[in-house]
Amino acid sequence: MKNILVTGGAGFIGSHLCEKLLNDGNHVICLDNFFTGSRNNVKHLMDNKEFELIRHDVVNPIILEVDQIYNLACPASPIHYQYNAIKTVKTNVIGITNMLDLADETHARILQASTSEVYGDPIIHPQKEEYWGNVNPIGLRSCYDEGKRVAETLMMNYHRQHNVDIRIIRIFNTYGPRMAENDGRVVSNFILQALKNQDITIYGDGSQTRSFCYIDDLIRGMTALMNTDGFIGPVNVGNDGEFTILELAKMVIELTGSKSKIIFKPLPSDDPCKRRPDLTLAKEKLGYSPKISIRDGLKQTITYFESTL
Ligand code: NAD
Ligand code: UDP
Image (cartoon, rainbow, N blue to C red; front, side, top):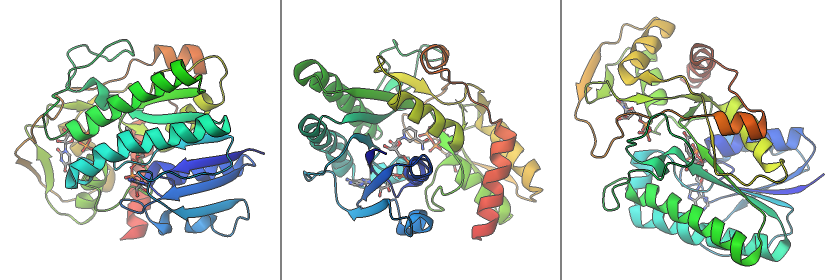
């Protein structure tokens, strides 16, 4: 049994991770400031005596006895990370510094939830880990993109200077049950709009692409990276099926049997035109490949949102 800290543990991905780590027989400390996460996401874990929930902001230091740290604390949806952009930078930069100091102190292994956003609006397609990206440092998304890039820098510097045992995962668009209803991300927006027979809002002309990973696949890849010796990443984890946003909208309408119409709204600035992970490294080092097709994953997510409405 390991003592494992999950920052951002009451969020969408964090709550699934806490559940998996408890099922694997670990003691889990879930730390969250409840900005985008909620107690509701982890209420089914509260009775487990190996589960602890702490209200704390990673911008402030904390001392805990831990063997592993998963650093997920950071709002992930554009509307939430742009709501207080300065705070998003602090969460990414000061937050990871505090967690790296904790890892240094306790000799814990630390995994940073990085993102495909480090590639920005990519010129190389699909994205391999050695691609340095195309990020606008002063744009609306930069609080998140550049924050996550500095977090990777700090991870590498603590590794080189203090020999901290690090892991960097670059997560591509992940969806599934427990995404927040007000999250604003495309999968939750489209499913909720479809279930309510409201207009489906496509930003731009819908020709931009994304590669959507079901939560269970991501959690498998993430825990595999944490528990693999001799490989620190960065490594892409996601699903390499690539779909236009228009294709996604049509699929959601079909799977929900909705009467919704598709409408088009302005594209937000710096919205990446295309995104797809090259998963060669994940396969080679972690034996990872995604197992859940977009249609199956969407069906499970639709069932979840039906139950919340
Ligand atoms: P989420 O918004 O559901 O979860 C983030 C959690 O972090 C929330 O519970 C929130 O309350 C908490 N948090 C935010 N700021 C904090 C702070 N300063 N101190 C403590 N807790 C704080 O988002 P998610 O989709 O679960 O994403 C989790 C992590 O994975 C994030 O770091 C995100 O950048 C990364 N990621 C997610 C995706 C995706 O598609 N979901 C893609 C790439 C990377
Ligand atoms: N998007 C959309 N309609 C929505 C929400 C998002 O067309 O209601 C688009 C968005 O502009 C982007 C894509 O869907 O091109 C994915 O958006 P999301 O916020 O889910 O993720 P990210 O842009 O961070 O990859």
